[in-house]
Length: 376
Image (cartoon, rainbow, N blue to C red; front, side, top):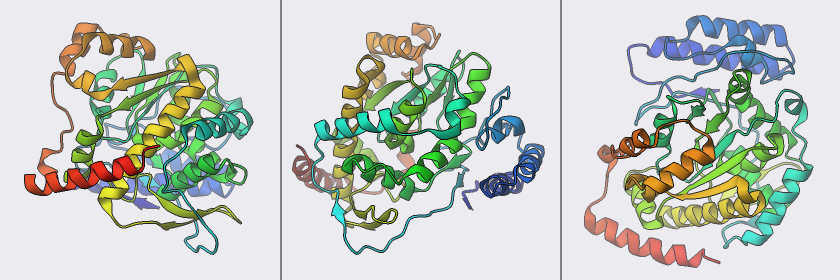
């Protein structure tokens, strides 16, 4: 497993915790639950004060049962997010493949999502959960999710912007390609892995009679799986203006291999993939257009369990939009406090800017052309 460690004073302590958490996962994956439990217990003992492993709750990633309390991942900054990436099982050898670069048909995607939700088997996780109306916020990233996370921290809901465990990008790409093709059979191991990586984060709030709100944009493609497990779940699509979003992703280097991207892929004998292009502007345009099509397909399926919010409405402190969002989520935050909160810029990453204004103008022109190309 690969850990991404900060350069803070407690780097060694964090490294020990992440490494031990990794061993806990590996033991559980091999069926040795006692060794997994002991590893989680050791990780709890080495855990920095700002985080909580919760050994009993963590074990529910791997087996049925019950536990109380919360798990809290390590703190993150604008530059560093410490986490564990689970093993990559995807193959990168292509014999026959299908491209997923062309514009996506939202209607077909909605039909595939609906069938996926109705037919996929969440496995033992379904025996652990109750009917809590957990919320998942869908986005491309760079759309205000960190700001919303910080607002929700001091409320009746339990928000998560990042987690202890993350599946590999190829696992997210696999789910994307299976939903595009409608061939979701064969992805069960990937589905179970993601559910296990998130289980403690929704089971903890459930033990307290609360709901969790997931705000990590990498999880957006997993929302149909979230819906299949949580029958009363709700979804917020936080959409930012495409040009502003391009500026942030491109100029600040925030689009990379971790994101969804156009691929060549095969689902024969498992998931295989190959990158389709090395043009970052074209890739960003595809990513934004795919996310729009996917999220609106989710909206078509979810009906009144889905809400689309323009990110700029939060940035400009639109009182009515903010009030509707809090009401939809079920957060008990006073509206005046919420409006004031969005008056402060958070996670701007201005120090990451890398292009001149002339270069950005040229990039925007290329982006506009590619964005139109991928429109349906």
